[in-house]
Length: 89
Image 1 (cartoon, rainbow, N blue to C red):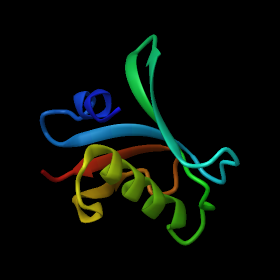
Image 2: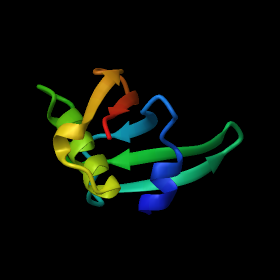
Image 3: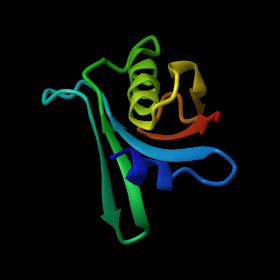
Image 4: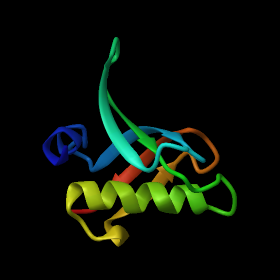
């Protein structure tokens, strides 16, 4: 998983993801093929209020990439399901 997700990080250190908050099946990340190319989908159990889902997404992506949670932040899409994450390496 780490290699597939790391391959989606652009050279400028951003990662586009689609987020599903309040997921019942637990937290997970899947890299799926779409007509536009590979894409990361993230499911988190946290609700989309007070930044809880965003924090859970950042924590989960950081863990999957083997980075500290402070290395991942939301660059764009705070209130959207489509987010652009900034990955500091």
